[in-house]
Image (cartoon, rainbow, N blue to C red; front, side, top):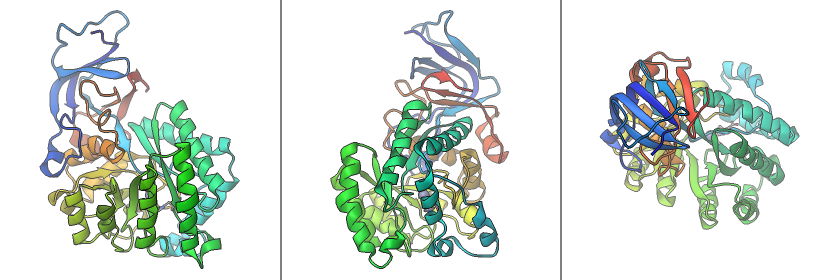
Length: 417
Ligand code: IZC
Ligand code: ZN
């Protein structure tokens, strides 16, 4: 076997080696650390992972690229499994309202928030949306992210805008080194026009939009913003069940602000992830553990909303709920592409250990997107998506917060930076 790329003398090689399923409980602290590690790649696949030197069956030649990992930490490519990547405009105009104490749901109720991004996304051309999202993907990649989930949801009643967002995500997946996985989230806000009859809008999503998205193959997942004043538990259930019938895997924005029972619903339906969970009930969390629904936690959003409330990560891990972590990158509640900052928040604020944090953004993140067979760990046969951090160990990356520790990213076996 011939290697096209070899990373050698790696001080801390974090493999996440293990079964291709969500890691729970103490498994989230077993990161498969190899000191003085070596990784060999052929094309876009990992062909060898070990300690010390290459074994004799791995050949190298003049074309083989060598990288010295002395003093470095190497991890699988990071996975950001919850973003609202494709959108028009920005919402810095909300900052002064926020500083006066007007909260996220009040701004939304007044026709701002998501509604203002709906307007900006409608007004933006395909090219403008593409250019803006590409810039964000470039930043994400520079921070070590190699796979990103992207939700629609800024078209709401205007289905053509929903399709435009998903087409941008698809084109970026084709053009950009970062893999972009699409989620249909028509159920993101109640359009003004349906304020007095939201069930009519739910009906349109179920009968018209979901079948069309599925037919076009534009999305892998279906998501709903289940929240007070947005979509109720019953409406969310109906939408996600309809999505399931059309092959769209259910995800849910659950119990972010008000405790509606989103966690319980996620367990009932068999969602792959329930995201946010800041206000989730004890019963809901237990039900998620039973059904192995992944808790996709977004502490950057809690930080930015300044509510003082964060998801109970320690509790979730202790009762056996698998945890992943994401940015929730969006123009309102979390305008940052920096997943490393989110990793520090998860540890410093939610008290996750660095080992749990890296598990949450690699193998568990891959599971949150149904990609665990090909991604999320450094093992023979998996995709050569790797991050070389200029950091002596994992703790250093989490502790020295707010900056970018990435030295190089390897995507599909190609050295990017
Ligand atoms: O644009 O505010 N929470 N949806 C649900 C968002 C945040 C995105 C936004
Ligand atoms: Zn979100």
